[in-house]
Amino acid sequence: MTVSDGTIRLIYPRRLPPLTNVLFSIVLGTAVGIGCGVVSGLVPGIHANTMAGLLLSLQAFLLAWFDPVFVASAMFSTLVTHTFLDNVPGTFLGIPDADTSLAVLPAHALCLEGHGEEAVRISALGSAAGVALSLPLAAVFILALPALQPAIDWGIGLVILAVAGYLIVVSESPGWALAVFAVSGILGLFSLGYAFLSWPAGGESGVLMPLLSGLFGIAVLLDASHGVMPAQTFTGLDLPPGALRRGSLLGSVAGALVGWLPGLSNATANALLTSVVGYDSNPREYILATSAANTVNAFLGFAAFYAIARTRNGVMAAIGALEEMPPATAILLAGAIAAVGAYLLTILLSRMAWWFSGINITALNYGVIAFVILLSLLLCGPFGGLVLLLATAVGYVPSLVNIRRVYCMGAIMVPVMVYSFGLA
Image (cartoon, rainbow, N blue to C red; front, side, top):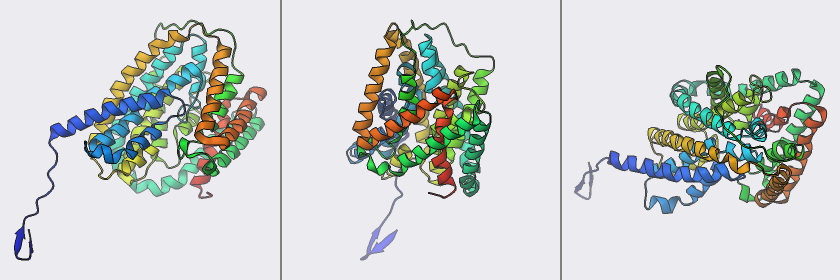
């Protein structure tokens, strides 16, 4: 109660919106987010960050009709849906994005063997397992880890360095592995350090599209098999005993690390997982583990945002830019609902694998290469074209010297180490 000019004014606390209104906002926002996630997940070059930025640019219009819970639910649901669907174009077309850089290799290989539907279903199963494990992990992380954050920030570079060193030492040819890792790392530093030269259409991290597409997309397609795509059949999931439990747990641990720690991404999780699950020796478990990591990263990135106010991706940055922060429980509920819808959509899309039966693989590969080149130029301009060309040259080396392509992940791991050690 205040007194001004002899007038008594009563100030009431702001009344919370009715529960039914909140639930309506969550459900409606989730539906919009699933639609946006379908677009970003299925269209190469468009990321969930792009769709979240679009929703943020419409904030004034949307808030005139809806509340912040609707907008935030739509943004987070877009990210969750994207983690389920982004493996679909990688499986059938061989086009990676920032989240499926290494996972696309075994998934597309299975497609070339006639098991594309199985690869997509395994990916969906991994993401679903990631959701189930990430919700309790988010609560633990929010309560326990903020006090340890300063030590974590500094130590992540050592963890990445140890993993990279281990992968190089156990390589078939450590000398070539080190060379590819170092050259790709220099390319990553160059691409990210001069990303301001690219066109703004691709967004802040748009240069990752030509970088990873060259290393793990075009370089693979140029060396891919030719002939006709075999008939796509599905007779069940051929997962080894214990692979579901082991892959889900390993993927969740990797996703939790990159979701909480600064400067890391799903591409880093893919590289970490290769030290324990071989994408060439155990492709199905690797697809499951990387998909779980992809989805866990989304939820733990959200937990990091609410616990220590740090943004791990563009979607969290967009949510943080809203005029009013909605409660975390509402957004987590939206993410859980989106996961159910995205899982069903992914299973539905996997049944369309038969569309690719009998397609000329050579023509398909050349068409995909032309599309990636055009998309890189449209999103990033001439600088994107240069990065794509250099990345393709580096990405082609592993097949020439007979080493695994994982060492091209230096393009992501080296910049992360440089950032962690405070060198840039």
